[in-house]
Image (cartoon, rainbow, N blue to C red; front, side):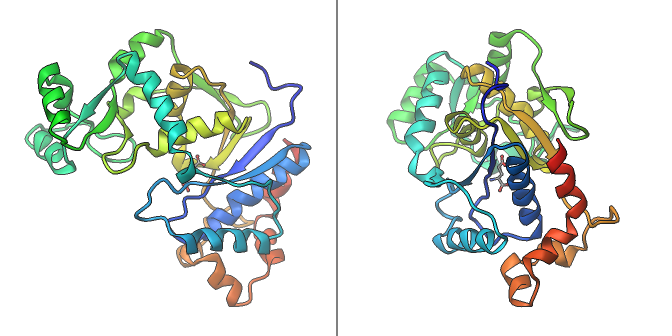
Length: 297
Ligand code: GLU
């Protein structure tokens, strides 16, 4: 599938479990300016699958902060909490092909299972790789536990998934310059990652991949903290037969001289800076070099 003749589609996809800080402003502005410079579309997506931690007041603050910054986005805004059925459907496709299994372990069970194994590997987020305890359960035992109402997460069977694909995965990363570089994906670094949590019928990884495809996103521009996650996203895209967007993982924060912005500025909610008198023009000025760069690629 090629995007060459289509309008490019960018998105800013904050999780509404807190107030936006200036790093979010940067990411939103880069997406917005890239959409503008390329005659593309700019979407806002509310990532609120975590019903415990995401709150309506944070969502309202997202709208207020982005409007204050001078951004405009298409309506309606997609709120992930209204689309669990889409994620369930995608998961069912993987389940049917035997690429997933239910996992009854708690976080504590996993930590305990690997505690005595020196050098047990961690995933890119720093959690111990899943040791496969529930993958080894018999069919009967699985059925018994599910039948008895034991809560289960759903994990991807990484080795089965990789065997099904059978070719190396990668993506085009546009971090430096407009031509981009081919990056080799390493989804195995995530092990048997959780695709649906016990308390939430999806996960960040599954819902972001489903939504980017459903919303025809062509360009994923986000912080470099999500670079490693892209390996898993590419795997899910191929397994679900979804198109691959191009990716640009931007540095988390820089001031015009290339220094990382100070911690306090980075962590302070945008709305507080705004109440303290910061203007949208000052925010843009901080990122002027990057926003100009966004305009040329
Ligand atoms: N919701 C994620 C976050 O706030 C970003 C998702 C993405 O850009 O892929 O960190």
